[in-house]
Length: 110
Length: 113
Image (cartoon, rainbow over all chains, first blue to last red; front, side):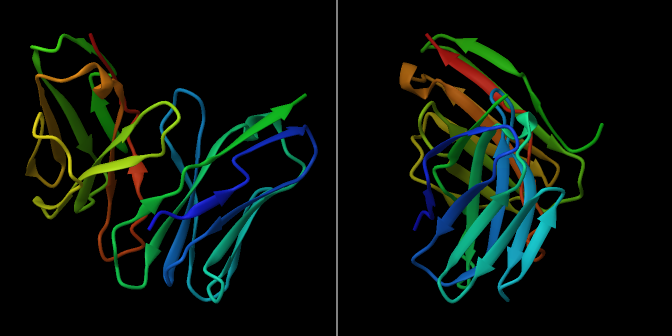
């Protein structure tokens, strides 16, 4: 079952914050976040394992609520370099193959 | 050479041609993947190889034929493709039994005329 991402697209001004959500209907073992810039391959950002932890990567952090099977990616004080499509990908507790969401397009304006 | 490499980076072929895409990973991983990414579509998993054995074939047409001679190399053989097969083909690798984080190659941009 493909994870559902919201919103589908976001337009921000530089310095503004954004939240991207990812939800699954299945019990999850892990949530992965990737960013793909136009014309490039997806690049791994971070992984969250079950346990409700929160992780950070510069001004990009994420949380994982395993009870709700949801993860959120937080981008604070966004920079122009943050523009791209953000994908979440999930691995279920059953050990199913990793499945990617449809992505959230983020566009940062100067 | 580090990470995951793919060749060629761009490929234009006719519907009657036969071509192959190559992927090589230098990360010591034991699983490799082929994905298709079309405009306005999410990443579509095509094939998965764990320890050189194909474990997933996601209802991919037979005109796509994968080959994994060892855990570092993966090929995608193409024949009699259709224009709708034009897409970005991405290879990825991961370490099964670890976090399963996937590391992607730069992709091959395929255009079928």
